Image (cartoon, rainbow, N blue to C red):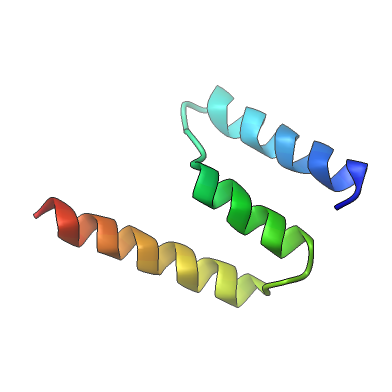
Amino acid sequence: MTVARKRALANAVASARMEGLEISEQEKRDCLRYLDGKIDTATLVREALKRQKKQELSRR
């Protein structure tokens, strides 16, 4: 990963924190996989939604 991409991710995480959101380590890893071209946008979204649904079901 290039320095520019690492900086972009760090800036995005900082921006989210300023908005009151926390980015999990898994979400950071997912973003890195996307930035590295290992997954496409559809896969990123599908995996995130699947994880969210699983978390919601486990809270019931």
